[in-house]
Length: 96
Image (tube, rainbow, N blue to C red; front, side, top):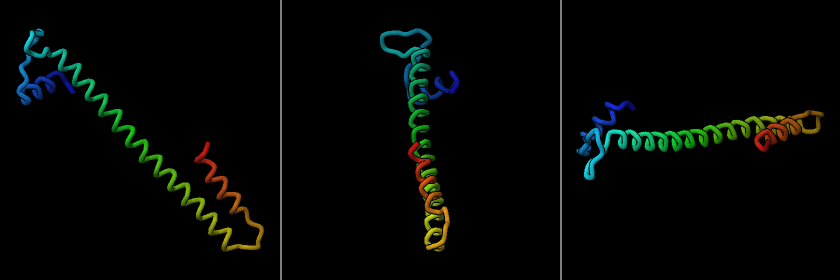
């Protein structure tokens, strides 16, 4: 967000802006500071949302892989397969 963007939005919002702070107006520097706070807050919330989404997707994929191992273990019941160990190892990755 540029200084011109901030000034344009302030005018659009009908804020009274001057280059110098007066009792009843906002200084451009104050608007820039406010815009930075809004941007940082939005960026933080946005990144938190996507980190949660990614974590959810990773956990879902991990469980799907472990389920494949569970199914292999069931399919080859009685045979010496390491599918159960694999399923446990895959699920354990999410706990470290």
